[in-house]
Image (cartoon, rainbow, N blue to C red; front, side):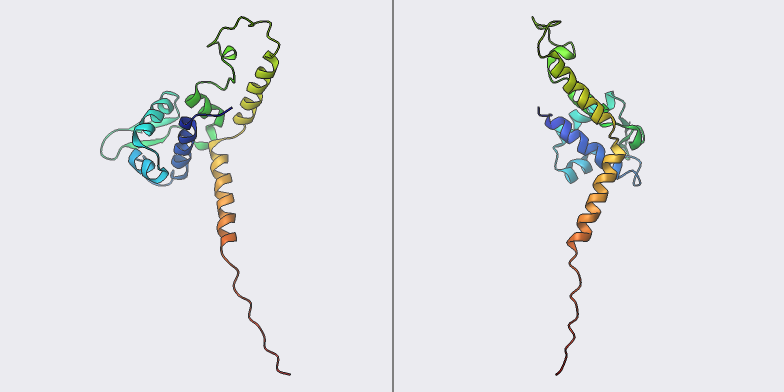
Length: 159
């Protein structure tokens, strides 16, 4: 199962906003588009979905832009994925979008239902804050690891 580019980019957008919370109140879409290498047109589509879901606050005007509507610890990945994908259901019959001749007596229903529940249970445990914190911690370790150790001084022993 693959999630859409919309979800990948939308999640990157939200992470960007969460990581820049200590800066200006609202971040302009142009800044996100440039720093994340995402087209403005595509971000505008994503913003509409996130705003409709109550995840984004919007301010108009010269100093306007976008900010998280809630604290990052109060936004779960489940909410984000559902906002951008519409559903976590791996098959249409689980979310009622598809009626199947086998509905009600499908041999594979439990597999699809279990998969949906497993994804939901996993994503609800991850907050936007925990995702950002984990990224920052890993990035910090990489930065430290990238710095080569100072060369050791050699002592010369004259015999």
